[in-house]
Amino acid sequence: MGRLRSNFHLYFLSPLLLIFLLITSVFTVSQPLSTDSRWIVDESGKRIKLACVNWPAHLEVVVAEGLSMKPLDAISAEILDMGFNCVRLTWPLFLFTNDTLASVTVKQSFKNLGLVESSAGFQANNPSLINLTLINAYQAVVASLARNDVMVILDNHISKPGWCCSNFDDNGFFGDKYFNPDTWIKGLTKVATTFNGTKNVVGMGLRNELRGPKQNINDWYRYMQKGAEVVHAANPNVLVILSGLKFDNDLSFLNSKPVNLSYSNKTVFELHWYSFTDGTAWQSGNPNRVCGQVVDETMKRATFLLEQGYPLFVSEFGVDMRGISVNDHRFLNCFVGWAAEFDVDWALWALTGSYYLREGVIGLDETYGVYNWNWCGARNTSILQKLSVLQSPFRGPGYSEARQHKILFHPMTGLCVRRILSLPKPLVLGSCSDASAWSYTPQKTLTIKGTYFCLQADQLGQPAKLGIICGSDSSKWEAISDSKMHLSTKLEDGTSVCLDIDSEKSIVTNSCKCLDNKNNTCDPGSQWFKIIDSTRRTNLGLRSEKCSQE
Image 1 (cartoon, rainbow, N blue to C red):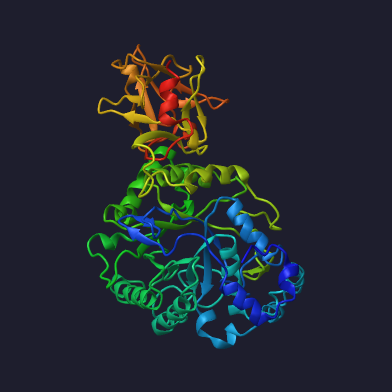
Image 2: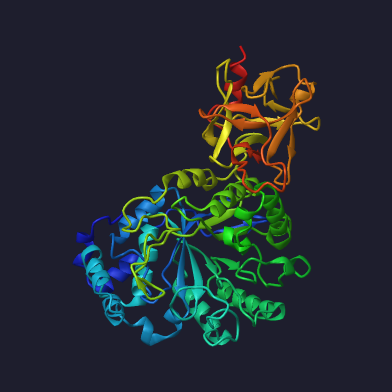
């Protein structure tokens, strides 16, 4: 069926007919998904990159947030319009294991919590949904996303509905008060069975952020492998996504003991990564040093899984969208560089502009939210623009339309270096779809593919240039500093300089910033560049670059 953008069309449908139409909605992406080594691929074997946003539905109301502010289909459509192809839709375990909870209507859930204003807003924006049971309302959200061609990862976020997470919330690990392993297996089985045949449901996250004093590796293997098996048995189409320990920050134990599962080509591991994962280190420390240390630690805790042939899904990361946190600003520049280099799948926290009820506060503002408080417009378009480059694959199965090459990526802006026909400033930042294709030689020269032109430094504070005599020191570029994101060379007089950008986003060379690891007040972001592997065709193309020489 077509997209039902108007509530008028849904309003006069009976609840039973509505649910039938919702569940049978058409979804156009080639399904099911599977894994090919470290990549997620579709039925044809082409890479599908998960570029998701988290949509919470696990709090006390047990309804996807925001539906008191805006019609469901409008939100689903805007998710796609913002460039996300996927939603990580959270669910509390008890929604699928407690029949009494599941049978409560949306209207009654608001009433039980005294949320009069939210109930009225929900009635106005989604009148066809307010008398549905909570479990049917959850299905309605999945179906709306399907109508808008948005994939869904069903994430078991918590057991008892409420905000997550704490070491002492009794929801953290197997055997906790609200985390009975048998009940969990029952819930996973029911969810997998319920959505078997729902084509846009492409994966299931077994459990969010395992944590707390009871966590241990032996029980992780015992129960997570069992959970994976029951999900696959009930719904062999979905990807099975396994989280680690310590709030999903640690998968290091898999380096010595891989999972032992009866099925193949369906297992994905997930990682969570925020600036506060490392306390206030980003603000109090030297950004180069902190970035280098954290990336190295992440390699030990999770990134190694890519080399072992598993996809790594960063199912939560995010920043304060108000743009006021130094900690988040520095973290995000480092994270975007890492995410682009390894071309990982990801899910941003969170879609939410505000919550019906969170931690006792009605209408709590989500400062990490993509939407603003009233779900009307984006909270920070510049951050979304920066992240948009990560929404498309740089490489992977099926993305071989161009020979492998390098691109010069600038994490702070989310842009890439491109060549233009301008003698004063031949190199500028632009969309990565227009990026120039480079080769990086063992002699450490950066040469534009299909040409003899190499990147050169001219003078301090002046635009970088392209030349054809590439044997001098000023043509040799090394990634220096602990972050490995400063591209440095030497001028003829021996002065070391780094690539940088000016106010017009032209590529220049300046003195290298923040190399003193004791300096925590500087910001090296403008000088951070990543040399990234890509097989993505650019709009400029290699042929047009050759022609531009003539």
